[in-house]
Length: 155
Image 1: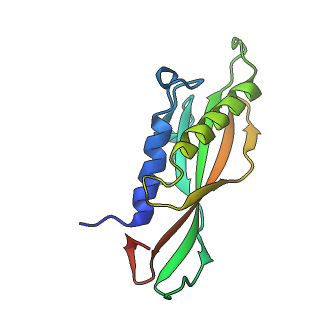
Image 2: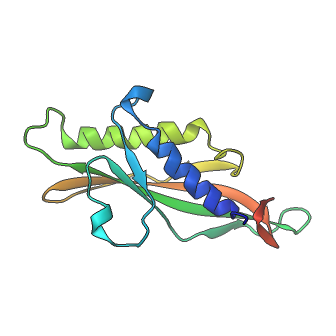
């Protein structure tokens, strides 16, 4: 069975984030998941876990030369959790900044998502603080192209 180009890109992003480890030269070791069910809290709120979800896509360019190709801008929201601790030696915002920078650094290594996208754009990160944990949300906009009649085929 074929896999849509969009799904291939989504898995690439999840897998790339999972490669962010101290052993690979990053500031921390992250895990990543794509939730099986949206808004189920037993899968999230783990320290250094990144939940990758899709935002609403938009047509970036409807027609390309031969009218058979559509270019999409697909946002992927990468929300990382950092559990707060009074015993931590590093400020929570420093940790969040490092997590965000590590994700950006890793994703631009191959901004074509293994040849399935044209490039990536990042929205400004969003930081939020709760009573026991803090999060940083990085939205990665993937610009990719498929055939107008076949989302399984790169355009």
